[in-house]
Image (cartoon, rainbow, N blue to C red; front, side, top):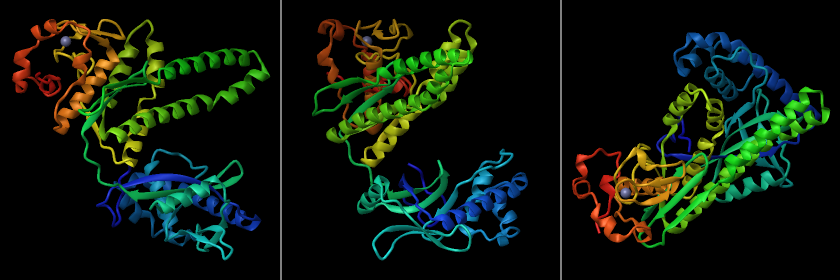
Length: 430
Ligand SMILES: [Zn+2]
């Protein structure tokens, strides 16, 4: 997902992954790591006053690099610290910083003569080998190495009295494959993801995924509120339970989002389809602003909006799609929920309730999220220049004559008269 910054390999886009390893250093080596970390933290704090004097990272580097060159920190590690300090300009004091290594210049992965893996790192000028625990992480790394992933860099830090190395492996992004259909995904609050498969050779597949997410988040909220009330009255067990609850919600949301993303991407791989999503990042700000304005229920709406794992789900989807060479098409979110996916006409009043969409023009009734996901899948096809085809016309609950009589002929035949945001251009003519 990330594009490489600087260096020689800028022209190829890379996909990155992080694999955690546990280090197993002896007493002396632990001491060495501790000293190195203390040194870079003090170095970072020395650099902080200079951040305001530089306009770019490059300028910052020239300003500070030579002055501090003789501190005994390895030059690659030093540059990494500079970068971190420059990015965190507003920080007042660093208490903890990870050691960052660049393969193969300041670190490398090697084997002992017995075949045990070691990380050879040089945080200070002396290069030292740190044994790696052969746990699940190590085997995962080995499997990735077989699949053509290369170790690019790593960060080393202390976590629960253990030294941990997060290795960044990467691989060039393969060219995206040719697609025949689209999967329109409507990411919503009540239904985490409603999708529609629009494909000439496959039957219509429509699903609502992750209906449990918002409900479960609300359950967590209720439980936390109760426990907090007890804890404020001095209950020790409630405080203990609160501690246990801390990461449970996050874990739940992350896991469910990953499962949903997997389900959609699996279907895309199977049917050779592109994934179409709405780009609503800027809309979210607007919604939050609107929610803060109201009097009643404003707090509740705001809370729901802030808890909405839109970005988590979207990023998981994009990343997973990239791993499988599936293209992801962002479309403009305007009017996808107001437009009728059957006749293509738009009306604000067609969405009668939260869940129901009833078209004012053709009487077409459909679940609102499903309607939006159908529109998104069609918009994606329209943008990709694929052959337009909407399979849901055979599933209509309204009589055929009624449908044909209200077909907006003018809109269908002259797509250029309306703006790009509407669905008009993508309506199939039977
Ligand atoms: Zn309609």
